[in-house]
Image 1 (cartoon, rainbow over the protein chains, first blue to last red):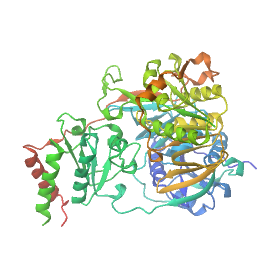
Image 2: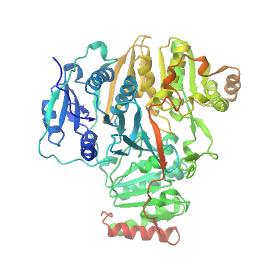
Image 3: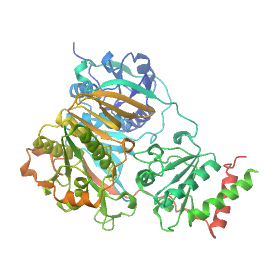
Image 4: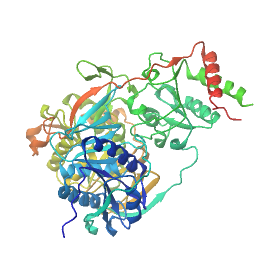
Length: 333
Length: 266
């Protein structure tokens, strides 16, 4: 039996694990609906899993035109080759113009394999999307090095694919259901799995985690050496905040990999951001969203970060941070 | 066991932010920034060395890089890789991730059968993290990303730990496979002077497009499905208000502001 044909030109992969959708998938639906409206396209949410009817209904409430569902026991857990097989088949059948995924651990694995299978272009870790009136997708990415952004197109092949960082777009509010659910072929064999999952561990998010922290103190390479790193931690503790890092301190071993803030690390939403010894690289700055107050402390008065902050302090962090902690103590008594 | 390790020279991440975009040529000025082997690639090589210590075999390093990077890339031979293949051709220039993966996959095919292909999970320059899963796809082998541990009981089954958002997954897979590693996997060894001298003696072959059986339409700028439309410097917020005075005075002003905004807790 032939599948119901999708009328949607813009597809968004809404990833789920254990029946819970990744927020970035929903964020992308909101953005996709805005983009598509301008050129009269419809938006389909693509959902793969097992027994995901409830989730399909939930996704429909975000105002999408279709939820395109592959529901099969072989899709209960994420096996990249099985997911690629199902998505390749659906894309060849329904020919969407655009296929978007969240830049999660799943999306950054699934997206590239699927793009290679389809021999099409994929823009990675995008921080914005544009769709022009001819249906051409322009994906905005932090450009390697420097304080610049690049706009990437995919002129010759379809679908035009992109992975988008979590937290870039707002979650749309659930609203009126206007769309339909259509089912696509989700059949896969054991031999399509590629690997056998032995076990999966989930850790509960701890308070003080970067994503939920109101205050974040982030250290960069300018902290200078491991012995200075405690200044970052002391200030964060004083402000009941979380500690973050740019890439070099992680590479140097002063900070943990899961503390990295930025394009390839975490996206954070603090009320207060204090960046110490940070030059102001786009790869880091794109990870900071919606801060009420951004403060930078740097020895170099010309550091690029001062162009992105509200308040700047110039000097040696070994002088400024202890003074700041002393002054803050005066207020907390 | 034959292990292939993919490495890439990148601008030293310690100098991040020092490159400036030339507004007229739309290129990055990287003159003052030295190159290094992408840090995570050294973790990939370290894992290969540990596996070879246990199971024997050969480690071949593959890099698509300008020939001028050879001295830098020799560090991989000094660390202990057996030989190196450098893919260098003007026709490769401008390759996007898929084109790069096509070229590397062709080089891997020319090397012959392998058990394991290791990469860093991402590079510090473009950071797309796309090339390794695309190499796996083009070679038709399974892959796992975000790998923080590899255990091999016998040479037939690899038990691999792969990080996910709120935890990790343990999976088993059979060779050949592509694994991309994160820094938690190991601590790369330091290179001794003796090892550097030793590395100088090892084979480093430069291959061009003519040496590979390539999927021609898929290489270089022309063959890349993605194209750069433009580069731009994002709109800057108004410049920061710079606090005045010495360290103590600036710190006091900041503390006042934070207090007024309600950031001081008892």
